[in-house]
Image (cartoon, rainbow, N blue to C red):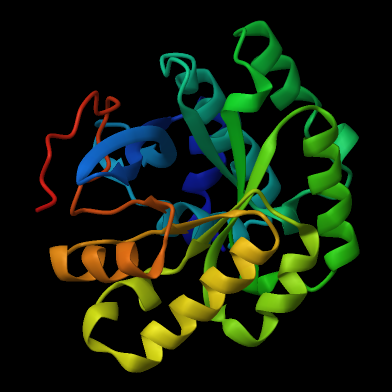
Length: 251
């Protein structure tokens, strides 16, 4: 436990920075940036980057998951103010929020102070497969929606047997996990999961987003299926500043 003590200092000193990864649509083979996911990174005292999994691993050991989740969320909101008119995807861990009205008050206050439009914000449920209490999750998401925000489910397809149950929360966006996107053009099992998720997502009126797109072959396959939005290294890696434009790389 002592080995994880550093996370307490990191949270207290707010040594967290944001990286941006574009989310795109494709229309007539042209790439349009429709939004950015804001990804949190920790900072060592010398300024070097600490990956998120290492931060949250230490936070779990120290029982600081809520504190770290909140710190990352607030930093993401603060850094979202430079994104003009596009969607802003911000991660949160639902199991870290015990009471939405109390736990999210500082987040909503900051959004208002920065004059960010609620309809720009898409709160993204991470660790989807760990959600056991669907009613609690619904309560959080209804609270978001009542304030004008959108929400997305992340990493869907992992723990696929829970997909229909999770879709009870009626998200605005559903993100197909990297495990089913990467190599989908050559794998029939992945294609089946991707197609079934797409069908369920569109049936409920939500947008289907394929994350982790890395090759043109996979992109073409997902476009042909009918996916609406895309994210991944094929377009751009996470970057300290938002990407302004992606040239027409799809052929």
